Length: 131
Image 1: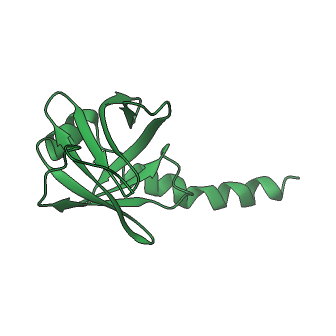
Image 2: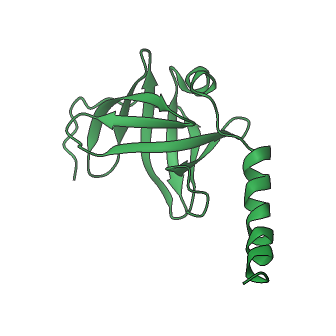
């Protein structure tokens, strides 16, 4: 048992070190970064959605299946999104990468991240019919 504990501790150190050197953006930093901008959202398979961030911590998300208006709010070190018509709350930790961001759902760095890159378009749900 005593051999397992040091091995487990050593395995966890790299993740802890990364988290300390790459802290999530604060709500204020996130707001300053995104307000009035639109971002394409990518996962490992490519672009799957786009989101425009409006004043008042409002956002419009659009993908192939839906267009949703919502709001975001800080919750601990996460940014949480509540969209009209969607009962689920989506919470992420966002990390500044210069002119783009990387994010993990629920701050879980063991999962695959998403990447948000600046986009030129402004998202609206006007005339949106989905798939």
